[in-house]
Image (cartoon, rainbow, N blue to C red; front, side):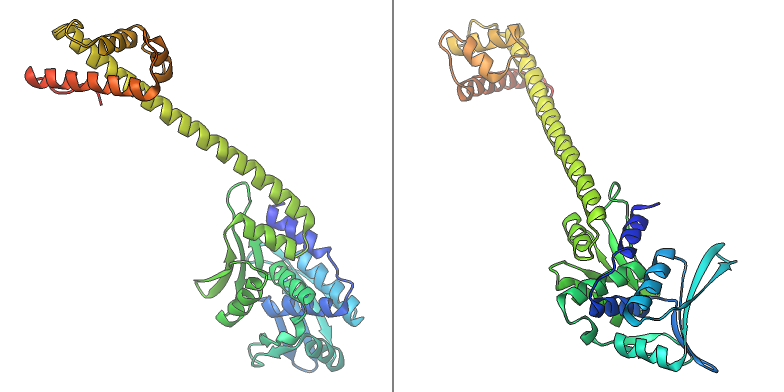
Length: 321
């Protein structure tokens, strides 16, 4: 099972003890589900269809806990997608009205059968907001594998639903954003810290622990890679500089010799030729009178300038950069 699937399985098992939270989560499941509808034929029937067994199980349990209603469940095979469709239905005007009134849901036009809105009264408490958020993700959300990338999203059928959810999530200090994708509107989080907070708010401690462990390992690898890359670049820079210094000193030696150099420059040139892999600090300690790194740098830079002056005088282009 995917990481997202594991999160939903864990959330499906989280049943709040408070009835108002159970109602809030039930409202979110109906409001954000593309397969929720209120049908009025001979008798009113509140239906929810889903391909996710975790959603079906959670909704069925919430109906029983919050309303003491035993919903009817039927299973169908979706021939087009070759998947199983779970249908949970509650019949009777009295029972359907109890659910709709408690969940504060606003019905769409009869021919559409869905839900246009939901009152903020159903999730006015902090605990109910968490339950509402949990129900929305369980119904219409998904997460990428944190080993690969950090992405958390909930797909909404309308911009109004997306904006409502974005505002609710931002109330938990998460920087939720909305983007339009084809005919849907997607509320999403991209940063690891934000997704970690989302898992905590939805009460998914097992998934949160696993997510944090993956984050720590990824950050450690990234830190090590950055240090290795930095050290590799420094080594390359040092080697390139040493090669250039060797070229310059060899050119000086071949054309004018070291006799015309000052004592300090001559000692530095001979030390570099004898110890091509020595660091600036080590070269400074090899001098008859030890000098610091800045002093070594100054002498090597002066040797380079002399070599360039000789090349120009002889009509030769500069050495390796």
